[in-house]
Length: 441
Image 1 (tube, rainbow, N blue to C red):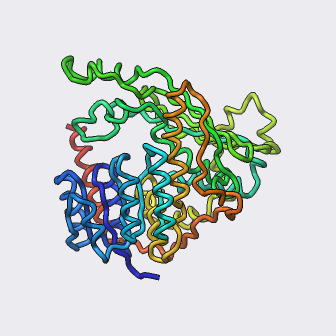
Image 2 (tube, rainbow, N blue to C red):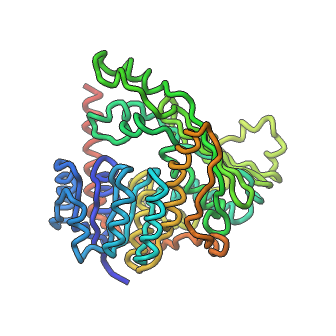
Image 3 (tube, helix red, strand yellow):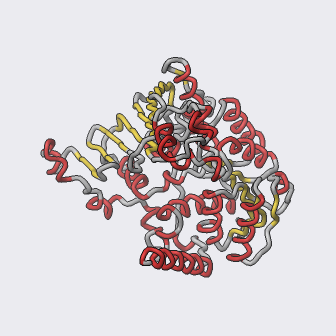
């Protein structure tokens, strides 16, 4: 086991920089020795953050292969645009280093297969950093499923329901890759926030697998309407034709008979929701009203008055909170560490695997399987919502793979750099005070 590891971070846009600053740099046993971005200003902002918060001077480069050539680097974290995730991870594993990738869908089945084969040939792990697999509610529901509280699971659903009209329509100005994707592709382009936790519930690649998929796209109207109102009349996007449907609905059948429904809804006005829903023979969980419904509970007899029981999840928290979160909630500062803490948890899980030289808790087969939904969805939509068959990236190993065992987190292994966290908290307080001052004036 290594006491400390050295990592490089590739991609320092909003997501990459946020993870670097608020998550990775807070870990005392992780040294960021290199940062990379195609844009010089982003590269330098990342390098400046490393120097400010940790004191070492990292390599700054616009070519990620410079990082791969550094023998001291143990792992590379890829937080670039979707298009580059697989290529950078493949090259990272070929260089003999652990690979971590931000989320997003694949562009071809070929790159999914190449990712898997590269990991198998090199023996190097690759982890998709799906933070929602480490959300407190998602892990609590998983714990309840494993304890049989919901009985035999029959159906799961979820979605990425997030109003992204401003981000997409200002893609040129903010240098965001979603704009190009929405102009050119029509698919479930962001499936893993909902699918990752569902895959854990349904034992995907560990005794079960997804065997077929059907996807349907609504018409594209939301972003065009937004642009007509928000952008100047002569803006080039006023005449643009967006390929991406406003609502993409995808249905998946599993080998054990369960069904999954995924919904991508990012081009219309709406509140944020991942719509996580798990339904079994003894009960269900529903994220949108944060409620648990159990068949033998007193409330279950009140079928038509269920609204008054919405929001009852907290009554189950003490008994079913996942061990990972039981440990994590002991941190006084834990909730400030990225998306309420789940970003920090997923990176701690990845870096612990790197330190111990073990397999990552989300492996290369998971990454290929979850990301392939985008490709298969695109194919189904293009063929009139025809069914398409799901590749088996495990090559049959899903039948005999043992049940997935979640990462065993211990608070004593947190390796928090309290000095960095105090600096971050001071900076956040200063921003809040400045914002309040502006609002008061």
